[in-house]
Image (cartoon, rainbow, N blue to C red; front, side, top):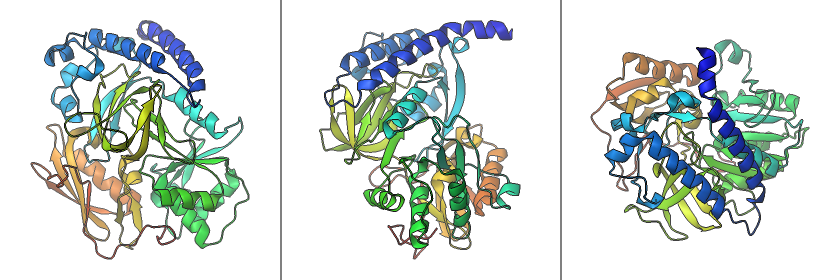
Length: 447
């Protein structure tokens, strides 16, 4: 049975390998000044829409589509649409493709569980590392929000080996969940031991490492070839400060678990170039019209490689300033897609929500329709949750245990019918009610 199952997927893997090779070859010209990938994107877009017409007949019937429409004629989709009508978003060919489940906390406070097929993210990640100057043998430390066993943290061990091959996400994971004034020295001792060529990870965490090095006049015995910032909105003052302290160049990456957009920066403008070989990117206003160059709108994406679910004109909830399109390459001048909200523990030290919430991928995410955090006192937060029908006490316990174990934060839970939007129509993920919070600006924050 296992052999038969793999045989059914043979065609998928052959097609995947051929397409991956083709994309790798085409990516070579992406950074050329006169790069024009219009024809290549047309091939990928037509191919995906043909597949979707065969794979999701209920989706087409539900939205009154016949498959002859242009991409801009498709409806805009949200996480809510997929949660409300999951049956129309399931591929008929699930047993023929490689699929795994994924969840995202979402910076807008809308947890979402979905499926994804093997995508062409790895070849794009390798493209960016090559751009940064990666050479075989270079070591990469990933600064993320991985949760570590108590027996490790009690010994001041805040890392674990991630991958012996280093690519695409790093060879070692260094968790910022435990980064404080008293533990920072162990982080730097580990980096001195590994002597990485690159750091990759959360902007806020790497920024705080830079602050510690600056405040304590630390000098490293290794030379960084580059730093890649991901998963959060990155501010100019952070980039300048990180580059000054670590004496290297900062690159940034923008993307989602849904595998529909791959944006990256590579020069001093810090503008994102979005690969048309990964997905189609639109920036739309509140009426669904594309914004003009220099205007801000919502990022809407279409995946060219996720065969498990139809992420067609999918609303990300992220805001970006549109910088124009040239040769099918969409430019985003700025992206405001990831929050850097911070809560505080009992001893008034900051805890990074990006690590604590978005870095751990809770099972509870798939059972929550909407949520918000409220902090009124140090060391404690209140969860306001709009439950899905399959939400259980186990989901509450998972959140309670993780917050306390990883950050020493106590939790209370309020279950509500809905959570109010801001005046601008946005979901507020954290309502911070503490007074006299420390400024996180350069040189002013605490670790």
